[in-house]
Image (cartoon, rainbow, N blue to C red; front, side, top):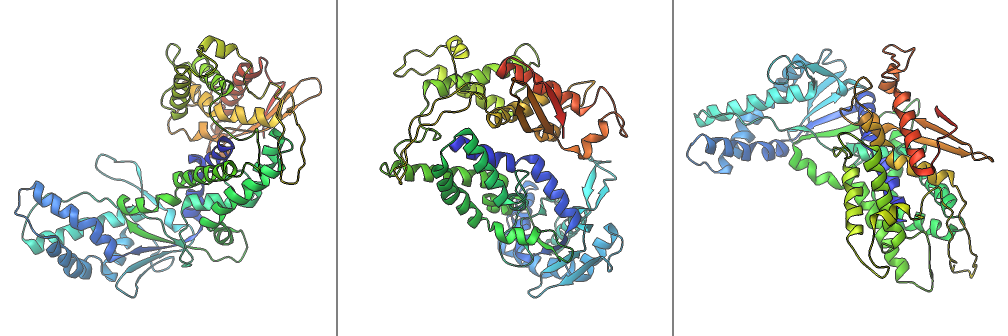
Amino acid sequence: MITDVENFFARMMSKANIDAQRDYSDGTYEHRFLIKQVNVLNMMVDRVIKARANAGLPAVGSMKINNIIKTRVWNKTYSESNVRRVFKTEFSGIGKSIFVNKKAGGDVEIIYYSGRYAEQRVIKSGKRKGQPQSKTVAAMQKLWYSAISEIKKDLGESFSSPGHPGGRMHGTVGGTGYQATIANQVLAEGGGEGAGYDDAVAIFKKDFLEEWPGENWLADRAVEQIFNPIKKKYKVKDVQDFTSATATRNISVIVEYGDQAHNARMSWADAGGIQREATAQTKAFLKFLNQNPKTLDEVPALKGSDSFRTKAERIVKAKLIEQLLKTKGTRPDFRLKVNKKLLAQAKQAKGKKKNIGGFDLGQAVKAQVVSASKAKKKSVSKRPNGNKRGVSRTGQSPIALRNLLNEMLPQMVASKMTQPALQFRTGRFANSARVENVNIGPRGGIDVDYTYMRNPYETFEPGNKQGSTQRDPRKIIGASIRELAMGILGRQPTTIRRQ
């Protein structure tokens, strides 16, 4: 159960999903960008003090720097007129689709109409010359260095200006007061697992029951005690109302200017925070089950202590990766964290001895491990209603095979991204490859349907603008699926199709 839930949220919170949602949000919604005095103080005071110390200047109390920012800097550099002037140098159409206003309390607000927040420009000088940069960040950098100059003038000193640390911060949606990070939006949209969070949870439940037939009670309790608390904590319904597609919606994403230190305070609502919350809720659910033995005597789907079969399965997976992900020699590509994790688990399992005795790697590789291609027998589960029945798993579960393929597909695709094929750079393409459906025919034939991030990589398919038989994404993914299927089942799929 823990593994199933963790994998579900890991897929939802993938980098590809986060990047796609950020691009969509920046390029679609209205944004209100707030420059708050308190955030500027938090970013600037300590950095100025450190820069002065590095220059060997006598110490000055933080209160003095604080007062300079609140008076001279705030009234001159971050005045409404000066902010408007600086933003006008970066954005065309200011006063038409971009507005600068002074809000109550002295905060400055920049309003971007739909899509303008995403605009970029090319850096003209320095180490990053020729690279793209957000126009908003470029404007805030100019304001930052202007503010540092004002501090120097007030102090009558010269020292190296501390670099601009700022960027966009997490904010709220529509001024409703709840936090809505990009990860939160992905969660509400279903993260590619379905058309919205509730639909994604329903698909998880359906897949779980196909792997564990008869475990309806467990699946229902998991929804109640794992998925529903997450839905409540991250206000999924509110975010769904915000992101739901209607012809008349008026969306406004509120973003605050700040640095990474301030940004870290919202880590609970980032992709990693959502995944940690899912694990915590799952463990709390298992604790509840363990404390109520009369309610649930035994559930085969729960993950308990590592058994011999569990350890063997881990080692077999690691062995497959060692054999299939060949870069130089026989070692896997350790740029991918999952390889380190699997191999570490295998090493740990190999080194332990329990009731079964010595754990042998060769024996584990040959063992009849729990896998998608092996029949599994399940023991009887007791339910509160007294309904007891033994269930056995199908000899070949399409869902289980799909999940196992998806677990290893990104690593396999990444290993094949070498010249003259598409080359591995960011990992977005490899992580977007996903098996959608596996069908097993009555005679054992296997049909696999897959997909990947077609924008922008579809352009490399033959017949498209940058089409090439060598750089064809389908060639990489098809070969990866064939090799994985051979390693898992001992035979290749009958057909492999891109959806």
